[in-house]
Image 1: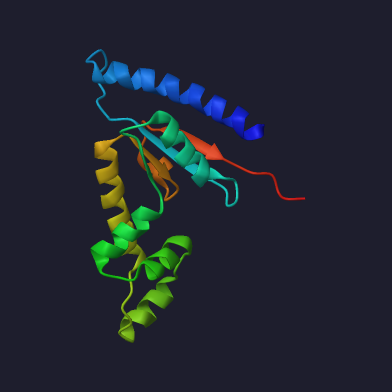
Image 2: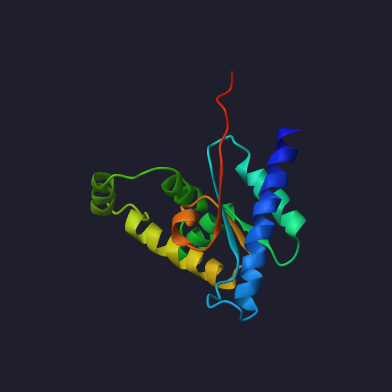
Length: 155
């Protein structure tokens, strides 16, 4: 029941945002950024499944971008996706980066990770019709519809 109410409210917001986007694309508005939806969420809140439900409801050409962003960074850097995933999920200290580079360990620095992340997100943003889950995308797309999903603590 709760998910139905949440989805209904989410669709109301999306429809309102899409109307504004339509006006921009029809020449009645200056801004021509294609539509983007960002979903930030707390772990375990169901943000990822909601993103896929949303994409299904919106239909073609909407696409969800989540784990494939990490996979694309791994592809661009020729690194194991598991290594990139670890970097994505944690904060590596500058000391660890220096020690790993001294000992020749093949790794991805946080600077390099962010450079690739920004490149991929910029590409996604220029194409539009994207639902981006996490990765700080809500800070990168000022005109996006930004959704935050939270969850109560389990009792």
